[in-house]
Image (cartoon, rainbow, N blue to C red; front, side):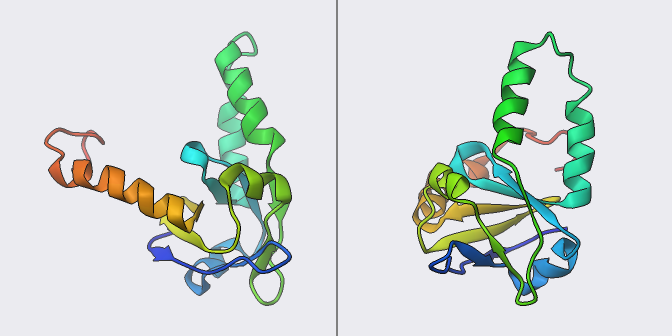
Length: 143
């Protein structure tokens, strides 16, 4: 499980040094792809394969499912961390997420999210008050 927030920097080649706590779970390969709110999702290869199998269950006649799969999969890039725990974030994905140098790497349970640091901070400023004041179940049966 991925937890916590880390604030590394991308190097001049667009490489991300994965947080040490996340490396063991990503050593065998990972997939980086577009996420919601203009962040990037990083999945361990096995989790990505599981998700892909679930996506395949959607009927081809469902246009919304086709659109989602096209965007999600067309930007996906499989990567293998190097010995220093670095992975290259492809230019297409860096552009999508507005990544330049300062980034936030957050643990989101089964995935990691990669955000432009300022965008992440703005997002938190916007949604954290609603989180603190939540009165109804958002995740039924969890809280």
